[in-house]
Image 1 (cartoon, rainbow, N blue to C red):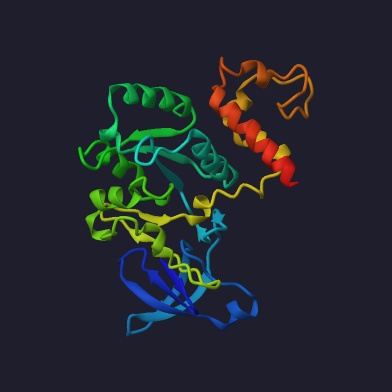
Image 2: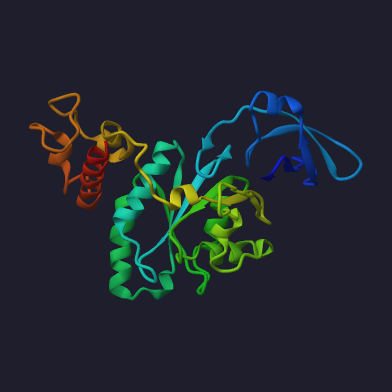
Length: 284
């Protein structure tokens, strides 16, 4: 649940009881350390403490922050207060695609939208709903909260999104026991002035866990190679093959992807792709 210094907070899978566990010396010798989300085998003692014996295989691992065995990313965004651009949403999505994580997109604060803005939201939702589950929520009007609980129930989720989109308010509404102050979710990592990083899984009352994801919040896509970017836009794979098998969908003749823009591929998505490709090419 939490790793700090050379101690880890371990929650028993069956009982839910927590233990402060030391690490076996072999971990230090082998330069191995558990990370939040790890499934471990441990031996408890009589004082709510114990010792971690082994770390089981990880099905996946996020690097920033280091969290293991994540089931999904829940991306929270808003059209108003703040207005988050589609390009920003697309940056989040390619990072999640790179990590091979399913993504649920939550459009929050829909109570702030007028009728015209709600029509815009429907158009935007149609862009993403072919490949991602899309929810529309409002804490104030209690819209979509039960559906969000269903999405999070019994899973390990990372909740991503820019500051101010209402991540903490949503969690407080569906699981009051987490008792997050508004604006506090990122601070749960307690990033130190130097290199100390303290991550924590928060238990949800209805089942499941959630962790903040500052690694997505910094939106650094520089680890992606320009030539692999096209693989992170799922709609590109559904058009006919281009004339050239190594086509990067920028200036090549006979590019099926460019021909599909505005028909099958939304213009905003292709614009994001082209901008990201140029950014990565310049960085390289």
